[in-house]
Length: 602
Image 1 (cartoon, rainbow, N blue to C red):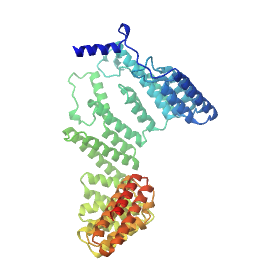
Image 2: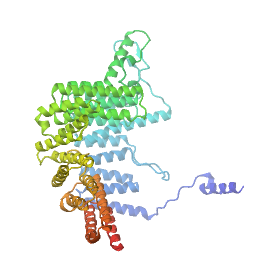
Image 3: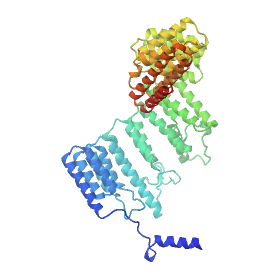
Image 4: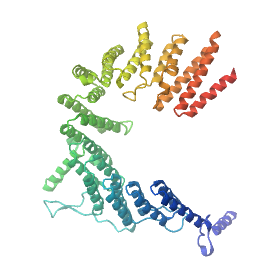
């Protein structure tokens, strides 16, 4: 009874007289309106004083949004567009305000602003008159019409009016119609987006990426396959000689097959669904359409046609990169691959083999393509063929002989086939004689050779190898300002750390100190800007390891303990300066605290 009485009291509090719900209490007072008006007036005067400054317009618009001053916001955008008609983001923001307005909170009373499709269209059309080549305005105008169509569809579904499904009438038989053929339910209402797309490609005719962006916008809305097919048809017709267009078609085919399994084009002809409903002309035409659609939706077939029609180095490289990404996509579907997925992966492998064959037949031996083809042959389980291919190229192509990437790939494949790391070192030593010191690839060759010699020295040390390591280390420090050819190369701090560990195993402290002192105190590496986060973390590990080594040595240093403590103080100061200059103040403060703690313990 007590619980029921408490519930009745709560209901009385939430309802007023006559059972009507009470209005939520407002925290605003009578004077708030005049304060808001005064702030609007201040913004107006500031914009009048500094007409060319866009920041005041943006700040005024944000304030109007916060205070829900819908009428004032329209005036703000109008004034801003009058002063800055070339700013496309303002046109988009103003049109968005006219159509979408604001989303009212659950405690707000009344209706929110916005909802005018006519005003939004007018704004975007005016913006396009001034900025006819603005891709952003064309895309937003296209997207606005798709939003409006979706709104109409939702309204019809709520009112349960139903949507008429127009029938497809075949050209050769006007009496027969296929009512079961798939078609967009709002096909007739999608005229405006199509018109906008046609006008957009007339304004920007030679940009395939621009047309692909329209497809990305269509994928944000349901039932837009008709528009997407029209866009893809225009890409096929207008960009037959552009590499990006073929890759876009292949990517579109994969996306289409993912969305609708019946459109997957990787199935063999024996696996296609057979029709048993007679051999009528209509049935034969449907079979022809389905076969053509499957060929068009097969990304492997598209890429084969691409490499046949456009035999350029860029086309082959793009095809190889796309095939690799597609294999990764297939392998990421699950832990256990199905038989169909394995067949698709094998088909992609056959495509890669055909690409390599076409490259060799046409003699398109650019340096990047040679590296890619060698990598493909190695990944497909044919390292011997890859070695024969790259040896033949390196023997007769001057461009490849002067490319560090080709020498690195040659050394990698040779060591893999022969099974001896010393062969890689021989190739790299030869490459260093041909690649000049000022070339960026020279540093990559030095890093690779140093790593290989370090591995060999760890298993079988000798005086010549130790001398070579010291010489290579000095050369690397000399040209450390050069950027690596590839970002996946080992960083200089991690290489120095590995060298320190190798020297520590010999039991002598002085060579270890000499290794890190050259990097930290002598070389210009700490002052070189533009370091990656990975390099900063490797440098932190290096400083920590140096401090640990010096602490251990100070315990057993005897008379040299004072000198080792001074060396530790130098390391702390160098670490603080290094990380503070590179914007890592938190790590820098950590080394300061470590130094103060070390001093307090003495």
